[in-house]
Length: 133
Image 1 (tube, one colour):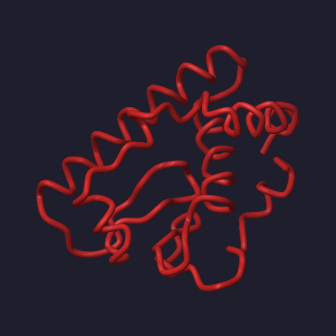
Image 2: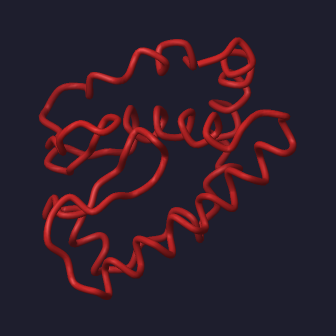
């Protein structure tokens, strides 16, 4: 993470908290995607996008891709406004999502690592997330 990312992160957390980055369509999940998340076959990733953690149907896979396209559009818009990269916005959002939105029993992934299931405690976040808080 760059110094620019560190400066951006504080603003990103405020923007995330106000719901600006993740608009309703970018967060919205149908019953099948919500069920897949509860079952641990779809999960959040540290890169700010949803991922497929197990076997899912074509309908769920298509919706995950659609949600990720909407997320990327929101990240791109904010990145342009803030003068940072899309990846920086996505990573800051990933930090926020992993720390506050992933529920016990749901799947998540840090980097290219293995999928994990959230237990009762906090998720061990990537080091760059500490810089963003």
